[in-house]
Length: 223
Image 1 (cartoon, one colour):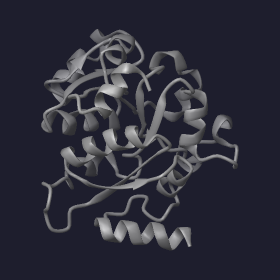
Image 2: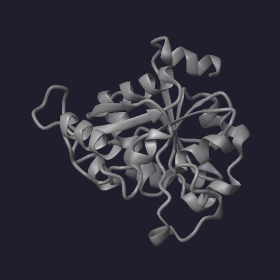
Image 3: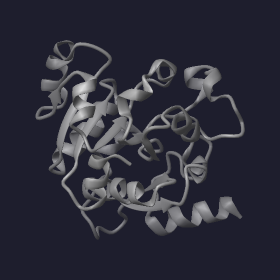
């Protein structure tokens, strides 16, 4: 990981850049802001084009050019439409912790050749392309409309759990801390490969489960 990514692992206060201003990106930005994080948001072009949308949908988030938002961020939330990922510049996020919130769901998005290799989960494919970044998978298995509705304080009965998967334990810990501060318990998966269980069709995709239920669903599937 890069120096800034390491600062998060070492306990620094992270800044978050959200790449994507569609449905999921603004929802992620809102809950991060509500949790006290400094948040910037970027789309594929001029930030002036999303300034009005941002002021209405994500008040408090700073619309920026993607390169500027990523440069100053500790954690990058990648929430672009999946069909645009093939054209995404890997150098943009080199040295960063990148949270892959995307899903490959052919019935919805159509067939994407980049993600058709059955040897790899979708986040493994993302990580192979973004080889200079540290990729963590989460937030893909909860609907953007649920993200604000189902969060709750630490210790709340029935608090929903989300999975956090990655190959780098430090990055997983940093991202899990964000998810827990936002309002969810976390279940940490030891690898991006294990993150396949979080994908569409997996045992926890779209399911509102407490931590014990989440862990049981994963262990049953793995068995």
